[in-house]
Length: 122
Image (cartoon, rainbow, N blue to C red; front, side):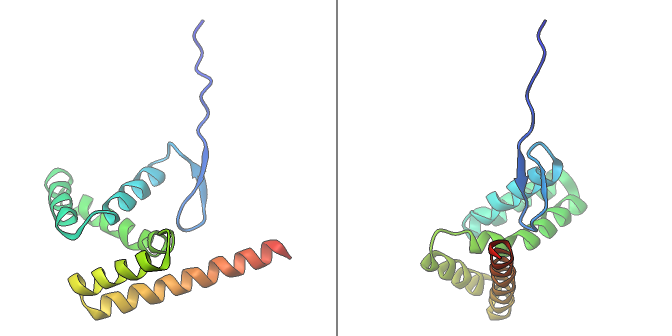
């Protein structure tokens, strides 16, 4: 008798919710993080292929996930130099307003994470 005993692991999404690692939400977040890790040209090409395969609504869904995950992606970069480099790249390709908006969202998320750590320690 061959019985599968595999049990999905629990993972934490960028918004803090805990879900199984075989869920569509986790798959979407992983895809968003992969695209965020691409250079500008590679990202544009990948998004064009996704739009071609999934249509405008599929691309819009992915872009929504990317936008919601991006602050966590930036904060999870290994060091401040890389975080600042990412923000400079956003400014170069999308403009100062986009960079400022992302920086503010990163600071807001950082504050939430600090509060959560403080509450957990208390």
